[in-house]
Length: 114
Image (cartoon, rainbow, N blue to C red; front, top):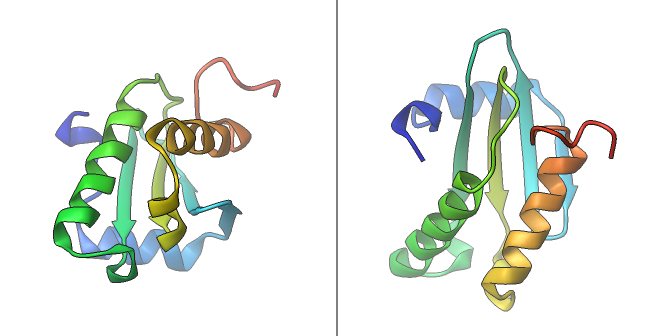
């Protein structure tokens, strides 16, 4: 995943979370901000209840890898917040659930009619 596709600043995280409604699906909470820019950006938040730093970083690496596999529509910023239930899931379950929530929000290219 390129650096241009990552939301890093705290100001952006707070703005996106404050101004958009959450979409909850299993262990994910998604905040999607539509904009008129010609790119897309993802931000990941894994809280301290998930585990120690090593575990949280592993979950973030896995999420970035899952997100990098697909092509996305342009013109949105997305924050993905993970609950502690993620530790009970295998990588394949994480991937399936995350791609399901992204396609339900029409973020993946070619999934508009689902």
